[in-house]
Amino acid sequence: MRMLPHDDDVSGTPHPTATAAAEDEPGIAAVTHPLRSEEDLLALRHAVRTATVRAGFKLVDQTRIVTAASELARNAYVHGGGGACEVRVVQQSGRRGLRVSVTDQGPGIADLDGSFVDGFSTDVARPGHGLGGARRLMDEFHVHTTPGQGTTVVAVRWTSHP
Ligand SMILES: Nc1ncnc2c1ncn2[C@@H]1O[C@H](COP(=O)(O)OP(=O)(O)OP(=O)(O)O)[C@@H](O)[C@H]1O
Ligand SMILES: [Mg+2]
Image (cartoon, rainbow, N blue to C red):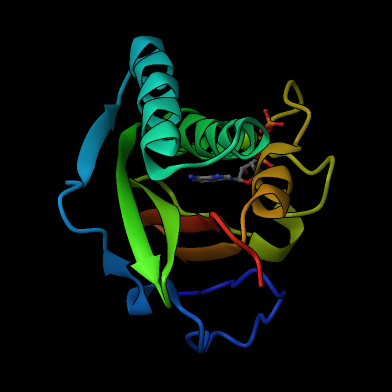
């Protein structure tokens, strides 16, 4: 299993600011959405937009998060054979965040480092900007991928940036 936090630490060890430290926002339940069709991908965009509004994000951040979640969801659908996305409002040190956790049971990402490079795709028909772009849009970004077993990407954006 590989983990790749946002700061390009590719050592494979869990990151000290790992999202596990974040707590659930009381009263706002996590929701898990299927990613098994184009309709699911569209529904996820709407659900993430709604969650960002509820969490108090301004418009530009709303769009950042929706775009990142959409790219990760499409990857799970296209490359991972379908999966699911959990959307969760979290809090840490008095600030709020939105965490999206996209999971599939597909082939895993063979070249994780290469997959973040703009223009890298294993599909000649695709531009290969999704994964790297999604990481740039979020504050925290962790990839867990195991060959033959699947991929989970956990990404968080916070409402305030100290
Ligand atoms: N969930 C996944 N399962 C397996 N492989 C993946 C997954 N997500 C990404 N990859 C691999 O990483 C590569 C880069 O992903 P990225 O999202 O950047 O580009 P893309 O999906 O090929 O093209 P684009 O997102 O621009 O349409 C993919 O081509 C694919 O090989
Ligand atoms: Mg993609």
